[in-house]
Image (cartoon, rainbow, N blue to C red):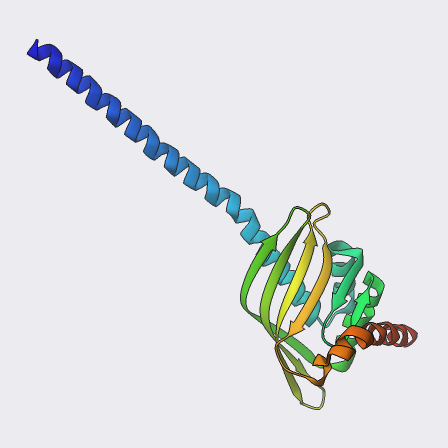
Length: 195
């Protein structure tokens, strides 16, 4: 009888060890699965950050054109405290003006985060932009760029650059009524100039 009790006890202990082992194995597998799933998202965030940085800082107009054609929707919108424009063609001339007006543009990131909804992903790029003129003047902007990426196309539908620096452009009337007009007028002028 005692031998039978010991056998049952050993079987019960072995059963518990088997369940525990399977539980640990399941946790490990799920952990690896979670890490594997998270990797493409981290990679996408880095890729978006690299694209935006190159778009702002390149000195090559053809590189800007390539990024617009491959990574932006045709009806994408760009907005900062100075202006608002819609359409890849108008974004093109606005960013080409950076090459014309400044001898160099640099960008460095402080941190990145993101938010998602069923239709799009918002990448928030906390950054510092340094603009240098040919005369040696330097303009430094602290900003957060909200990059909206449409999930279906995986293309950028909006760039919203918010400056932390306080400027005269913070006036609510200008922001509401003027910057769309400024964006339209300067886009037309730059287009006439062949930019």
